Each structure stands twice: as structure tokens, then as C-alpha cells.
Length: 381
Image (tube, rainbow, N blue to C red; front, side):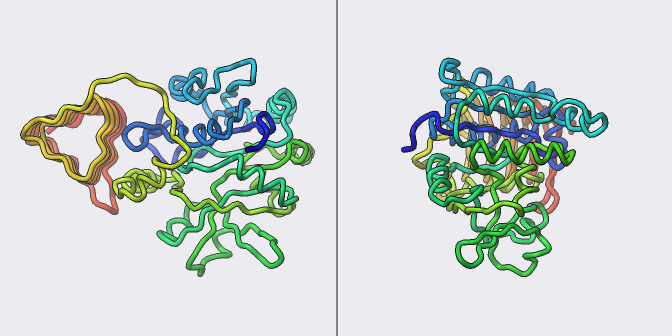
């Protein structure tokens, strides 16, 4: 394994959260619950922890309250030791981008530079926060050094749902001759039957990152670092690192639903959650789930502290959910604290946390038109 402290990490929690409304009314995509126990941010933080990276900076689009509540000191990912480094947070990045674009004042990249300077590392891992994957960052960095290229981009070969991928993803990596790698947009790969899709994660030297920030500042370009690197890819020599495990991008309600539901497939569940890279999350103590003698549960993931009296099929149920007698839940995602009343019926729906569904109420969506209920709603019969 590479020497410790040789690489730091910058994670950008700045993805467009309007694509997942109303689930992201008061949280970034990174804070969305996932697979009944985790949050989306857990996966990149777990990869960072496995790589024994000590210094991590998180640049958050808005206030970040939900992220601070979940991550706290970073103890769950062994990032709470301030002697070695720690986890550093910078909020309100969206406001800062607008502020600099309008007034062109102080160095927009000052905090990025300061973090990299104080981390005293040679390389930096730069990532977004809306991808579900478990990448080996140390291996990625070692391959980057061996390649001699300016930047290494991690990609996943995909052959399913290509129309949706072309619609919702901006960068595709196409390998050329003599180990050249080029970046293309959706219009350039409209007829491809296989896509090497960038997972929005990069490794490069700290010197090269500073050089790119200098060029961007001179050009008046103010972007989060993952978006900045994407913009400058055509000017860089690129090394492509192939990731063959479970990979999903959360960039729409449909992709969030699909990513969760795909884990009902045992092979896909194992390829994400039963690998050499453990997925870590905030520790929560709770009682086991209670299944009533008359309850029926099939092909579902059920969180702890939950009580099931009715029927749950092909669904993801988070912690502290109650499904009352004669209620049915199918092909749906119920987030934390949802209460489903007696005889209620839910199909093809995503129900956000602390929603109350009255006895006899119905929430019926379809595979092509999911019913999405906002946090704290009250659904009457």
C-alpha cells in the first residue's frame, strides 16, 4: 500500500439538488438515505477511510446542516484525529460562486489552496458526492503515478439504460490509440452500445491542481473542483482507471429509486456491500425489527427499530418505520420514521421521513411515474 499521508481528499457536495426534489428540499443529494441504513455520502467517505487518507475537505453547496448532523467529527470514518489531519468543512459554496461571479473579489480558490498546503500531500483525490460506488483510491493513485499522465479519471463500463445515461451524464471516456484517453459529451456517443462513464472522481498532483486553479482564476472561472477538472480535461493528458463494481449516479428521482431497488438483487447487494472495502456510516443504536406473526415480507431490505404488521414486498424500508395491520407496501422506498396506517396501500412510491399515511389511504405510482411524498407530509384517506 502507498505510504500514508501521501494523498488528501476534496469532496464536493454541490450537485444540483433540484433534480431530486422534493427529497432534497432541505438536504443535498449526499445526505439522501440509501439502502435502509446508509447515506449517499457514506460511500465516498468509506473509500477515503479505506485508503487511510487523513485530511479531507468537504465543500458544501448550502448550509450543510443535515451533513453536519450525519458526519459530525468524522469519527465513524476515523477522521476525527486532528493531530494527523481531520475533516474540514466549507459551506455556502453556491453563494460564494455567485458572489465572485458578480463582484470578482478575493481568490475563490483560497480555501482549496490553504487546505492543500496544510495537508502536506503530493496528490489529491477530488470527487463529487452523488455516486454510489466503493473505489480503491490507493490503487487508483498508484496507477496514476505509474501512468505519468496529468490526471487519472475513474470510469465504469455500462451497457444498461444507455438512453438515461446519455441524458443525465456529461462525460464519457473513450480510449483511443497508444493509450490515449479522450473525454466526450453525450452528442458524441449517441450510437454507442457501451459507455465508459466517468464517476466524477479524479486523482492528480497537488502541483497540477494548483496550476489549474491559477489558470481558472485568471480566466474568471469559479467552479467546484470536480466541475473545474471536467472543464479542463481536454487540456490534460488522461489516464483512465476502470472500476468494475457496483456503480450508480444519483442525478434524478428515477436514478435514486433504481439505485436503491437494484440492491434487492443479491449479486448487486454483495458487489457493493460485501467487498473488501467496508461501507461505514454514523453509528446508531436501536432495537431489532419486529415482525408480527401475521406480517408478510418478501424480497425487501428492512431497517432496525421497525415494526411490520402488514405486507411489504420488493421494497426498501428505513429505520423506525411502522407498517400497520392489513397495510401493503410494494415496489417502494419508505424513509425514516414513516407511519403507514391500517389498510393503507402504497405502490411505486418514495415516501420521505416522518410522513404519516392514514388508515385506508392510497399512494399509487407506476414504474414510469413514481409517487414522491415530501418530508413530514400527512396523507389522508
